[in-house]
Length: 156
Length: 308
Ligand SMILES: [Zn+2]
Image (tube, rainbow over all chains, first blue to last red):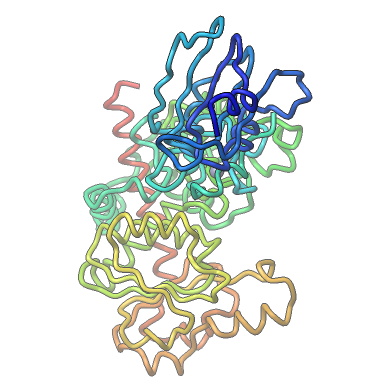
């Protein structure tokens, strides 16, 4: 495959965010994380199973006119630690956002324990401590394994 | 968050536990010396779920210290019924009392409430989560009867939803205790409890039959298996019948076995066991008062010293 082919599949964006080097298979989860289902009219390009120098294949997501919140970056860091985030202005990368494994993830995810206090109407956000292989609800202690995380994204 | 809330047994160190147990022993030895110690102090009882013994033992403990209690009453008649959040209720009630006791049906309720109040808060049970004051009285009873080091403890019954089990197993990791869990497969300890036990390096064994370990046990902690955990009555009867103890079982156990139960029991301990030396569950229930006196005394003292 040539660079030109790739350009056709995943076109450049003018302003927005490029989330690159996603583990293959994570692109749709990232869209879910960002609450993007196409209904908002955002310009979105998605590349799946794209050949990569560092990963055998990777996914890539480009979103126009959108930057990621810290909570979104935190979840991304857990579900796809190799990912990179580039902020684009006028077709140029103006900032490469580091993604570090966070100590906790606030908001964004809901607790899978239906009896957890966070599932009620209390004035709190969910908070999960990041463990070696998953997340743990700060309130009820429930553990989410890494492979289960995307099932608990809060639908916005 | 304040350090003097008691939310989970996982927050307790061996030193924390021993401080409360030692103070409870002093209270037991000379109860009169503690009367009036906290006159003028008020304890708020916030029970969002029915409770008889836990509520009454906190009430008694505070009164024996010379203090008074206020009780928000049944949820049915309170503003909670009108849709008030727990956060709001607790923020109001903290203005009425020097310390608060909370029981709530949701896991994590006490952790959350502690973020909203600035008086000491005691978790008296949060759903299937934690019940640390029950654990303190359990430990006190175990220490009195079997000691707390180099012992083998069996915990039997509903280990999945049993908050007393979750708290006790966490606290026991502070001591040299071999823990055996005995339950039907569907009611084994949950992932989060297993994670904590594993992290603490505790020796933990799981069994489906009491007979696998009965002869080794110094302490058997029995909990109730509730009907509502099973889809149908037959299934429940079949399973519950396997996790009970009677006089014939005691024949196969050590003579020194201590049998405990957080109560109320239904039929998981046969009444004939009550008359044996193994039966320590009523003593255990009575220990709730000195333990809660010791805990409240420590909390209210710390609060006074902090200049509040
Ligand atoms: Zn939770």
